[in-house]
Image (cartoon, chains in turn green, purple):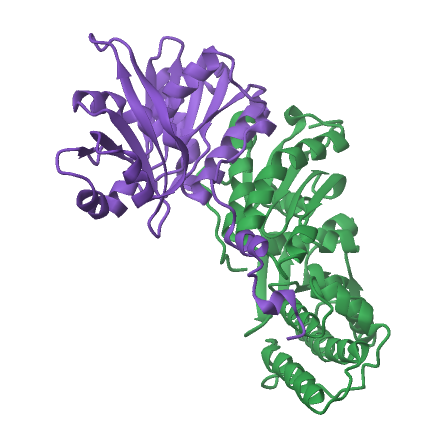
Length: 338
Length: 252
């Protein structure tokens, strides 16, 4: 406690960001330190798990130290430690979990293991201080494309998800093939702004009627086939047009299904979360489609869309307040379900 | 002086407390590769047996490898973070040296000249070293004298360096290379540590840590680093220029 505020330290190491943050009363960010490894992994065309794990170890203690310092608090002021224990890369997750457990044990601070995906949703509590459940959540990231009904702080009901590739994965793959490189999402977003979204007729995959699931692998294959046939015909590829058309095919389906889910469950708000939630076209399209149905769309700012410790702290805070406790046996669970 | 030693680089995790007189209290996991789940309770058990609390600790020592990459990281991260929180220094201990330390008395009893710790690094490779076992005639003083440096060897290359001298092997490299050793070395020139002594243990880490603490060979928590003895595979390929074409040349 400091100045009457309950302080949570959130730790996140599930992929390629080493992050820690101090959050007051589950809502107010006092610090948000993110040490990104993107530059290191760019040389390999994607995240290399062993290298990510090594880098997390080198950074984690300094990141925690900086999170405390920037919040101007000491370890003694911390009331709770929240840490991501899955889903993610196992070697990366275990650095955060080992550090969080050692800290909890050494400094006698309660511990909460947090599902990374619940953390992404909780990022919205930091951005929109009045937001309370219930609402519909759309979680889109490198590994996830999910529509989740959130009836209360500590429950998440997954209504649909991807059957093959996640949206971010599809972006990465196509970005690599058209030479934009890694990370694909932001690069496609940028290139698409200069391109024509109707230049190439990529299919919209809605699956069976009423389904809230997604499938992007067929679309990805269609894009690869298109690029191949253009190449064989000796035609030059307009990278911006491919990016814009491909992006449009992905985000249109996501936006339609998210709005459909909100309507069916009578939710007046759609809350966006995850790295791909910062895609500018997805943001614009979903806002337009939702407002036509009288639904509000809330989005975290881009810094809260990427992996960060603050969202983990917020999710941990609400779990703790509901009476949840995590013991020292906490393990990393790479395939943790929603 | 109360030193906590953590060992998670091998099959079984363990923790030990050693005091200035060299008295040791320890706890060992019975489950294989249960390092992350078990580490805090092992530490708590070792502290409990020693009758102290974490606030009595003066140093945190960790076996920094080589060994399981994942295991190394769990132990080193735990040690770093505990030291950071408790405000005490760290001590880095080589898993190879700790293995040799754990087998020194047994090697001397077996009349071996050399102690040879070998950790399985797969495909005929081993992390290892060769030590000479030094002792006085009354056995009061025993010490390890490094003959061949700690590094990654081909097992055949390491065996050649023994020059036919009587050698006492320890470490999980025995499980992998027993047949190779038996066929390469003259009969009667080698012995293997028993299965109860063969694997990394926090007690040996603690013994070396105490020696280091006494001469001030300590580190601040941020300087405690793993000794993997090997680059990540992708990094090896990047340096060798053999990363797949798809990554180097994304348009292919």
